[in-house]
Length: 93
Image 1 (spheres, rainbow, N blue to C red):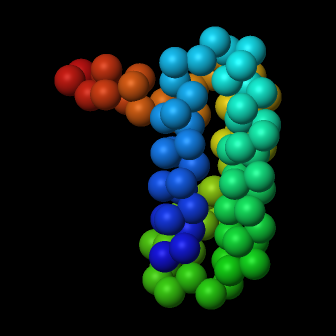
Image 2 (image 1 turned 90 degrees about the vertical axis):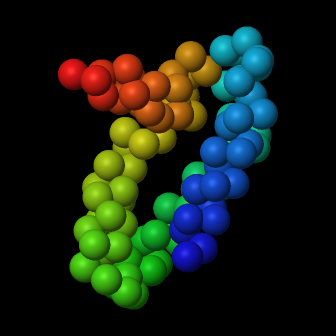
């Protein structure tokens, strides 16, 4: 379950940056969050074959296949880390 803990840490650190201007947020993402994301992907790559269930293996494989896109927020301080707000907004439809 280390991958879930890694994701939680990334979200906690990102939450600390929400009040910053995009330029400052990007700087902090590079310093604080990028190493965490790098470590998460190293962990996923080294443990992909050890996934305990088919669903977990599917989730890990998906994350690895989407790595390029999952890292976009690290290159632009205005890009949100996830699209949860958009998904909540359209949930009623």
